[in-house]
Every structure is written in C-alpha cells, then in structure tokens.
Image 1 (cartoon, helix red, strand yellow):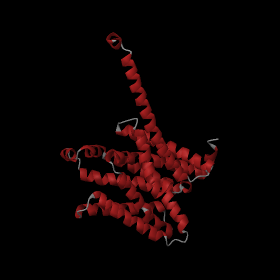
Image 2 (tube, rainbow, N blue to C red):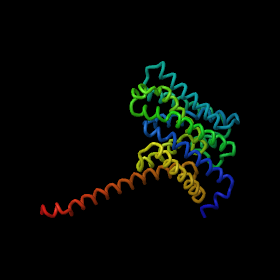
Image 3 (cartoon, helix red, strand yellow):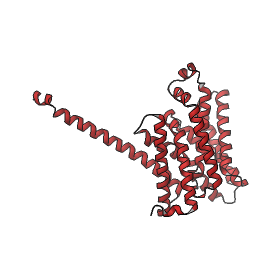
Length: 289
C-alpha cells in the first residue's frame, strides 16, 4: 500500500529530493536553532522571491534564481552591518520586506500570476526534476564541507566570540559561512516546500531531535531522520488525502516536534513520580514512621 505511490517516477523523484532537502536542512537547521537565527532563516526564505520570480518569468531554472537572490540578500545584510548603525534584526527586517515586495512586483507581471505565486510560496515538490536532484546533491556536499570545515568555529562562536578569537578561529568569517550555510539550505528547500514553509523544514526536525539528544552531530543525524520521515509521511498524506505536498510535509514535521516535546515531558513526569514513590517506600521512610 505504501509502496504503490512511489512506483510513479514523479513521486520517486519527490521522495529522493525531499530526503536530500531533509539532510541539508538538518545540518543548517541545527545551527539555526542553537544560535537562535530563526528570523534570519525566515527572512532569507522570503528574500529569495525576487530571484525565483525573475527566473520563472524568464524561463530560467528557479533554483539558480533562488540562489542568486539569497547571495544578494546576504551581501546586502553584510554591507548594512559594516557601514550602518542599525541593529542586525532591523537590517534583516528592512531587507526582508524590500526583497519580498520586489518579488511580488516581478511575479505580478507573469501571465499565470496565481499559479506561479502559489508554487513559489508553498513549493511544488512533485515537479522536482532530475536536474533539480543534481543541484540538491551538490548543495548537500557543499553543506557537509562547510559544516565540517567550520565546526569548531561555529561551536566556539555559539558560546563566546572572544573565545573563538583567542583560539584564532576567525568568528567573523565563521558568521559569514554560517549565514551562507543557512542560505544554501533554504535555497535547496525552496523547491520542496516554498518560501513560506521552508522555515518549518529548517527548524521542526531539529527541535524534535534536540528533545532527545544534546551532542551537535547526533542532533543533525536524528533531525535528518525525522525530516526524511516527514517527507515520506507528507507525500503519502498528499497522495491519499489529495492535499498539497509541501504543506503536508511541513505540518507533519511540526507535528513530530510537538509529539517529541509531549513524549519527553511525560517520560520526565513518570520518572519523577517513580522516584518519589521509591523514596516514600524506602526503609528509611518506614523507620521514620
């Protein structure tokens, strides 16, 4: 029953592409959660819209347009931080709104405005092509390379920038590469879940994994597994319930995060109750009575 949908080539490509996206998002999303960079991720996701819209209107590959747009937004944010007096969040907010508005203006010139806008905002994982899969593999390899090369710098900067400077880990470069890693993950995820829902794949599997484990590499691995399960389950829900695939995947990932938090809370509560009961029944308690 569960295998039948994936006999179709487009569903098979969607599963492979979604799984690659899940791994990429697990790598970048772990640092997004640890560093509290969710707003940046959301902003980059929406900031890709101009490039995506322009690529759609002109007939270019949308992932290339998304990548160019993400690079431009990252560069503008860096320039505003170096030369301006605005806070980082304020800079992100301004660039985010500007890029989103520009994207909507561009896509409004499309003859199929409603269809294109829906695809950009909510994704179309069922339309993933072989060339998209190739780009996702390249994005995954780049993500692994960046995460491995700058792991020590990311860890040190997350706790204390001064420590990173003392160790010669160049926290400034580490911050740039971390933003690049997030931009890469969001660009790769765009095709699957769109610019509005990308933050769900970036955060939810990591939040679910972080409930159970604490070591960063283990969080990444568990988050990747949860993300892939979300893709598999979301595609099956989409197939049998006739729902949109991207939102189904994101919704299931968030459900996993909620269930993980609830299960962990119940386990801790049961352990506390058991400990209290054992203490009440101990010989010392009996002698005290």
